[in-house]
Length: 75
Image (cartoon, rainbow, N blue to C red; front, side):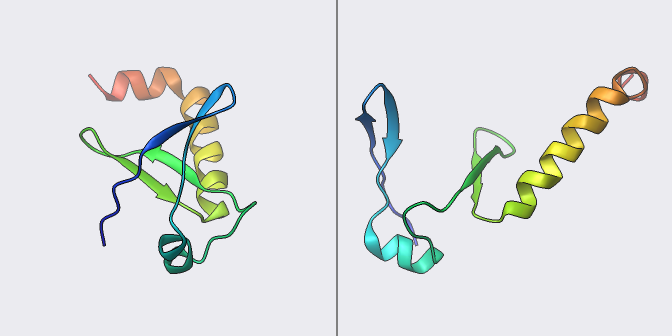
């Protein structure tokens, strides 16, 4: 399933309008949260799973804590 979604101005921000069939397919409704992360290449990944947000917060904290170790391992 591919939808061509257009970015639109919403006040001082820019938003995306999800068509009703897509919302029904994704089991989303107004007020639900979606999380967007970078994907390999130029892509993005979107999920409505709150667990992903928690995992990303933990990963970000670990990367900050072990910044020097990760830098050495990357050599």
